[in-house]
Image (cartoon, rainbow, N blue to C red):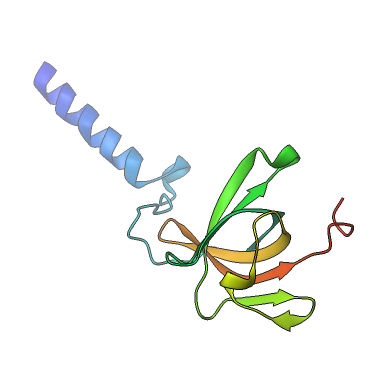
Length: 121
């Protein structure tokens, strides 16, 4: 009897993992997922640029305590003073505004715009 109870408990746990509350299917969230989340935006200061890896780390949040790494592709639209530039043209310490989408656990930049420090609050 106790063995049947353990098997039944295991089935309930697995069923709960597959479905959310009230039997609604749980959202898949595994690293191999190819679904993209809606575009997100950030404003911050360029903390680190790695042209070889095609990444840029941006300090965000109050006092720049957090950071976000953006993957920069050939299709990323990077603008400075209204003109198109490359990742290599950016410098650490510059203020930027970026839009990005998250796929497979990485944030891919869609647009990056260098902003005037006076524009940001």
